[in-house]
Image (cartoon, rainbow, N blue to C red; front, side, top):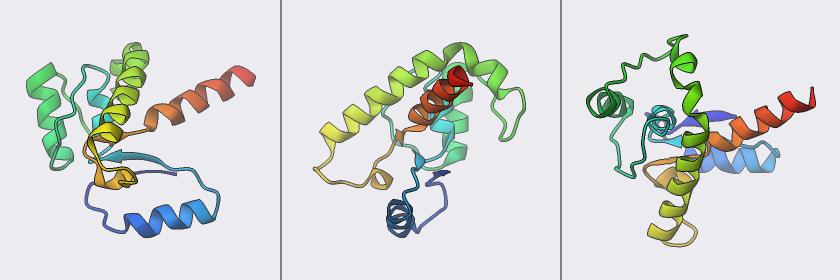
Length: 127
């Protein structure tokens, strides 16, 4: 399952139900757009919502992002390896900066979309 925090409030229940059903979650906080940011650079700056992240993309990197834009993948695919590394660095940072046991939905920013991408890449190689 893939989802983000932006506007959603039932995180504890969602994570508990997913765990009980053996469903893995690819989660981004505050929103999926943080994963896009990581294609261009690294930041642990907290964001307020997806619009805040989109503004950051435009002002910091000059990247014009539109939700659902079919050209997003084409504009970011060359930087996937960088984004995966930066996502891992962000998780390390958040784990060190927050008390042990802090749920990921309380961390900002956070993403583990890179783990989903790696799984998809492995499956593609096996096909």
